[in-house]
Image (cartoon, rainbow, N blue to C red; front, side, top):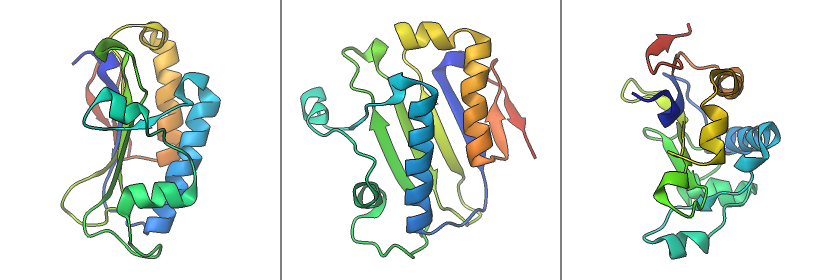
Amino acid sequence: MNPLEEIVVIWKNRPRTLEECTNDWIVFMIKLKQFDHRFDVWYEKGMSRKEALSRQAILDFDYIKNKFCKGCPKGEYPEFMYDISFWNGGKTDNTSYSIRASLGGGKVIGNNLVKLSFPRQGELFEHYSIQDNWSKLRELFIEYWEPDQTRNFDGKLIDLS
């Protein structure tokens, strides 16, 4: 695996309500934006680039809650996970990157995870091709989510527990 394909953190059996997952996601996305301003603007994914660019994501509680589960009560636990995914709106596939999460799972089936997929070229790719920069960003993910596993710079899965 190319280390710049992704940063991923994984953990098991940590049940969270829809409200908790929503708040966790909003706080993390704010921290991510504060860490690197290039993570400021995100869009919902769509059937076409044009469609997706018309739906900019906002860090509002009701908006994020409905992206996780429209119509679900705030205090509800997911059957499996609450999923969310955004894209940066890159002009080409090679400059596009995305972030996704599966949160709230407390069952044996599946894992909770947060994954940032990197572009294949461009300014962000160049910056995070430097291992020290990549490691600092991954540390933000680890400190916030307190995962059981992650991948190192060489792409190998490592246990943190």
